[in-house]
Structure formats: structure tokens, C-alpha cells
Length: 378
Figure 1: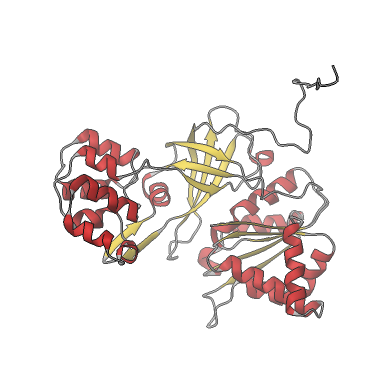
Figure 2: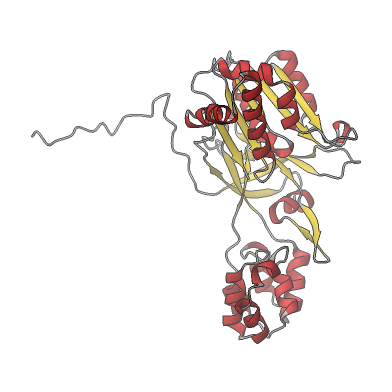
């Protein structure tokens, strides 16, 4: 009897525990599809509002939504032509909706060689140049550079299943109900003389319109959460589409009447063309759900100004907020922005508190250890 543990299976999650969110894909309808940039911008950022057929999954501010895209039909046709498989409608549909036809890795080339026995491709693998060669290239480059007789089975063996793409949810259920909003920047670029596009982002920008149906599933992120105490102040750094989760944060704090102050740092290229959700931020300032906003538009003056520069300019007030217990959040580019923002915060602590470099670094590291410095970067 002394080894029996009583378990209450009827116990529900408490206020400080998150309910498990279903990871099953569901179908949603696009009810808003709006380009947030002006027609004169060199960027295209889509605000996508999605309505769930049933109740919205129990997503939280900070979570992401995985979107199941389709490949570019023109690229699919190029691959079929290069492979000599034009006219195979079954294969075409599989390449459109089921197979990853853009990712190119050393493993992809190895599978290609195994399927075709192509000697030139084998020599590429055996050389030390394979990783440099695949940089900026896709499957179509491999098939065109190393022509071989391919079958539908070969293409299936060479490619992997088409994975969903995750985007930060830009809304709070407390404000939008059975909807979820996304902020998606269309990815377009040129490499090795070929125009390239992001699979999901350009699928949304070019081939999805209001009324379309999409498959999505929630991807929880328990490491990017609002403070448990609603009276805690928050500082949010989200340039470009990195602002998406902070729209959700502000909506949640407004809907729940959280007394904590909210401070947003936002940046992009041009004030006139690229100020994402500008009217909403102005309204949030007016109703008090946003205490302040500092913006950096890098191309509006000869010298480029970024969010980290605004952090440095506002360092005394920012450190004061952090000394008062504020939480600090960063979302967006991991390669440069997130590193520059952290460096700016370390520098701010050093200057405001007259700390040496090691002590300033320790101060920021302490925020990280206590989960008061949280990042959602990609």
C-alpha cells in the first residue's frame, strides 16, 4: 500500500499550464489577402487572415502556424521537361503538392548518382567542390547540368516529401476569435542566372487569393511567451516580418487588459512604403496598448539606420525598463539582426551602468538565463 501513488485523471490544466495543442493538419479559408507594402516598394509582404472551419486551435501568442504549400507549376514543368517526363499527369501532381523540388544537398546528389549512375555527378561528389556547387542551386540545376534518363520513381527517390513552412502567428485568439493571421514576405531572388522564389511565400503571394483553402497546423513555441505576470513590462524588437508575433502580443495584452507597458522597436527599408501595420500601431499608441514605438527605416537617409541603432539611442530608458523587470523579445533574422541587437544591448548596459565588457555581457546573459531575454529567429 505504501507504494501506491494516487493520480487524479480528471484534473484539468491550471492557469499556469498550457493545454496541449493538436498537431493534426486542418483546413482553413483565406478571408483576407492584403499586400502590406505600397505598390512602389521593392518588397511584398502579405497579411493573410485565415478562418478555421471549427473552433480555432488553442494557439498562444508566440506560436507559429505551419502552412502546407504547393510548388511553382512553371518549375514543375521545367523539371519534367529536363527529365524527359512531360505528359505524366500523375507525376506532375505529385511534384506540385507532395515532393520537395527545390532543396539541393550533397545527399540529393548522392541519391541522384545511385539512381542514374551518372559518372560526372559522381566525380562532383568525390571532389571537395560539391558543397560550393550546390550553394544557390536547386534540383532543376542538377538535372539540367547532368542530363540522365530519369523515371518517375527516380524523381521520387531523389526528392524528399514537401515539408510545411512555419510562420509566426500575428494574432491573438482573445481578439480575433476563430482566426489566425500570418505576415509573409515573398522571397524572390536570382542566383546562377536563374530567377528563384520561396516555395510557400510566393505560393501565398502569387497563387493564393481570398476564398482559397489551405492546410495548416499549429507549431507551439513554449520558449517564446508573454510574461506570466500581466503587469510585467515588455520590450519587443521585430524588424520586417519579425513584427508578426508582437502584433499577437499587443492584441493579447489589450484584450486581457494587461497593465504592463509595451514598447516596440520596428524597422524596414522605407517609412512610406514598408511600415507594416502602421495604422494599427498608431491606434495602439492612442488606446494605450502600446506605450511607445521606435522605428528605423534604413533607406530613408544616406546613412543606414537599423533597430540596433535605435536601441543604442534609447539605451538609458531601455536599461531602466529592464532594471524594473521588463522582458526583452527579439524576432526575425538570425544571421545579422539578432546578433547586432544583442551586441547593442550589451553595449547599452556597459555605457549606462559603467560596466566593463565582461560585466555587461554577464548582465545580458543573466536576462537570458532567467528567460527575460527570448528570441524567435530564423
